[in-house]
Length: 493
Image 1: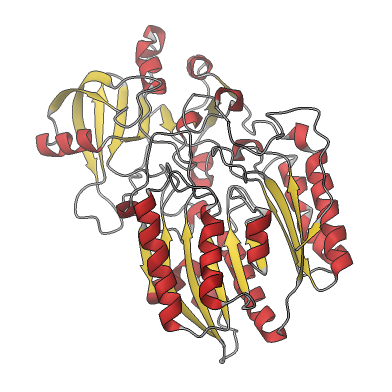
Image 2: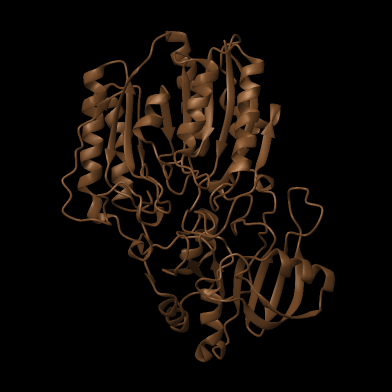
């Protein structure tokens, strides 16, 4: 049994000015692919006749739309590898589900259609995805099974991949296609409203495993959809697979109806949220430190450009905040030119320049200042140069990066198995306030924060969806629209 492993995974905000070129992608090939799955620990029990052959997996953290030429290069490389190294008994696809190629719709659908052209219509294909991806009817019809993470933050990345891999082996052994029931749920909610650490996300997504047992199906999965792309396909979805058609339909209907019924309960998951000015007011109430503030409108884990300066500008303008004796760290401002200038000037130098807003200045311009170069942050992935420069002007320090990376450590369980060259994390101890460019706090951040506030800032990942210009989405969609009468009847594919 020869099974191929290939994939391309990213998520793309169409509301940012950022673009994702080829050089941002991490290309994982050959035996290095197995490290993305804890292969030795999880699959040692596979029969000796099962051979997984790793090809190319192209991954990049969330950003703006992928440059068409970049997608075409990766697509063609993967298809050529599949064609040249067959024949295959099955294919496992490592995907995300929210990729947008600039000027095109349905990137994953195009990719999997191409896989089908190479391997044929009948060959078993399974796929792992992020629940913040989009499982359209077409995409679901192109594969025999799709698994999505059941936890957000995604602490179950490896579990999801293992589920898709093992089901692929089972499908090849059995030699027949399972029944698949798919439902489009007309909601489009951001992850900051659908975390599974709180209700109703905990109960809605926690319903899947009991439903699998109750209905006797092979697997059931749910998608939230990607809220920051203006494509017709983007919406929540349910997919159930199994060997009994009536059972998969009943299970899918139950999950979809429960999902829809909970829609009004999906609110911002943070205990405290509001505008950036309200976030600063919260800091002045002297909450336990360190205080973590989320600059959620420029969430680099969802496609923000990482260089927006709304929060930085507003903070510096607040005389009461500047005089309060709090030290701020703005972690992860993406500005390669300023980083290069700091590197050339060296530690202790003072840069008289405006920083940030190099890609997207729609919401605020670069921030002028006299920035002292305090230190450089070395990478942990063999980078040939530092990955960040920490600059300070008064009580405000800014970690300026050349790569768009989250401010998380390599030990954060939400990013297990993810290659992140350019990661610029360092211990923020000593700062009273840490500003991060993500929405809900990741596990390591939450463990470090003594208190937190999610600021609903504008940007390419704005959590106030009414401020986003949706023109092509498949309406009606909650919460953009009200008084929706949904059709939640499962479709057998």
